Length: 152
Image 1 (tube, one colour):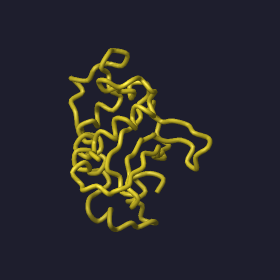
Image 2 (cartoon, one colour):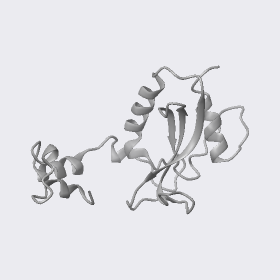
Image 3 (cartoon, helix red, strand yellow):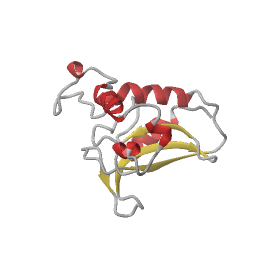
Image 4 (spheres, rainbow, N blue to C red):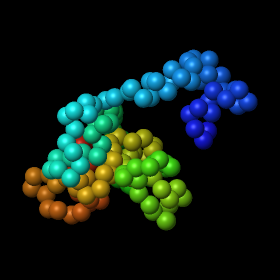
């Protein structure tokens, strides 16, 4: 649906949502849901600033759980676009993709399509170079970092 409020629209009658809680309650939850303290956030432009700071604990917990899943024999690391119309500095434009605007994620997936590891692209700060590795750019550095999560 075009907006979350549409789930409570009487004409659309989406009962799985509208019968569980009122729309105003959902709006309050969205407004006050925090995963990190704003006080500890490093301001933009300073060293160590993380564009994903506000949701980093959620991303880390999800990644931690994905890394525990038994792995398949064959893998691929690919760039996936998570489509969005949101206003965000993380949003990227790629005219060659079906969904031209979205968040970019580098994903380690098995042949089944299951994702075992991922990294959300957050601009130049995404280029994390592990000790002993050369600077190969964001895409190659991400591939190198993701392959460290499993052993041959």
